[in-house]
Image (cartoon, rainbow, N blue to C red; front, side, top):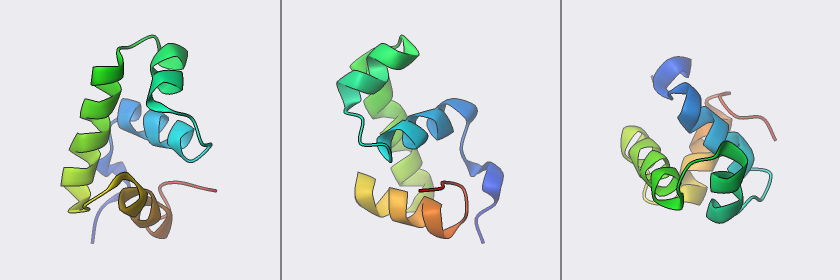
Length: 69
């Protein structure tokens, strides 16, 4: 079982914004980081979860209770 602390603070911030329908650009602007950095955090999270897409990662994080919708 995946632990709730699998995500870094920044990865959690990014996925919290993703579930609110923010674009990569929106997230980058809100967190004052580059779009590439946002994509890297998303990619790292997808890999950690063994997911194949952003949406699959979101579903998994909701199932694990890490994200709330």
